[in-house]
Image 1: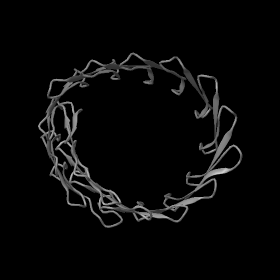
Image 2 (image 1 turned 120 degrees about the vertical axis):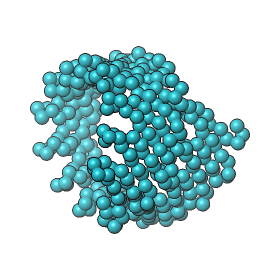
Image 3 (image 1 turned 90 degrees about the horizontal axis):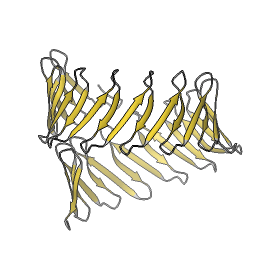
Image 4 (image 1 turned 30 degrees about the vertical axis):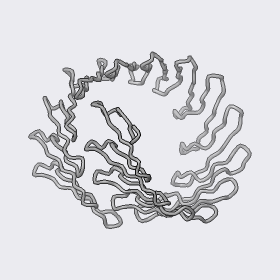
Amino acid sequence: MTNALGKALQFSYDDTHNLTRITDPLANVTDYTYNSDKQVVSKTSPRQGVTSYAYANGLPIRITDPEGVVYTLGYDAAGRLTSITDADNNTTTLTYDGVDRLTSVTNPLGHRVSMTYNSRDNLLTFTDANGNVTQRTYDGNGNLISQINALGQQTRYEYDAEERLIHVIDAKGGITQLGYDASGRLISITNPLGQTQTLEYDAADNLLKRVDAFGKPVMSLNYDELNNLTEVSDALANSTTFDYDALSRLVQSTDPVEAATQFRYDDINRLVESVDALTGVSSQGFDADGNRDSLTDPNSNETLFDFDKSGRLVQETLATADQVNYTYNARNLLASVTNRRG
């Protein structure tokens, strides 16, 4: 697969059409292996290393990350995921109703959230870990018509014959009205004070103009033939322009005082450098796994970032040579942050 700039992303397959290798334009290689059931049993990335998978009855039951941490997955008789257990035996449990809808999630600390549904699978209630309940009701077409939060405050919603939202009525009775054109595009918004702003579009449905309640354009926009935004003008006719390359990547923005900022990308479309006419050059680098491992500001101050095989940030080295270290527990939660002063 070759993009408009001639950069290739390569894919390799085995004799049974399993994807076995991806090579990006920077020659970074990710490999995959499979079992006889065509299930991925290992993924090897350039820097992180190997993630492996084990299966039973066609379902993944064990995942071993590149650091060797093992996660065990449990299922019910219907094949629904019911538990996730980490290396420290911390378990998250999940429950379902009779039609496979998730009804609760309980984390290793015993904090539980729960959900109920109507016959159309719309969410009726959500109860958070503190027991706060949000309630919803729907019309016969499944459109949300009211929501009551944990404080008992109700917001109501009304729709037109084409099921487009036309009124939002807040807890104090204030009404926001929305209007549409024949193509279903939002063209007016009237707030509870009766103030209306209007919106205009081009033939490609790009927003061209937003006009306030006093008839003054507060924003005007222009686009190129690929629908890339090329210009934004404010109410005072101050314009910012945007230029793009053949891949529709932003390569330059120019503000109302003609100060330009240029952007440069690597072969896999990551922003690696920006050149601001006023402040100078900023850049960032990446490791083989796509983690941002360096950041340099316009004053040439460089911050370095180190990651473990699981992609977790473990060390940050500041331009002053000060270091900040990060550790994690078996649940991948941040456990400590230390610097050289402790």
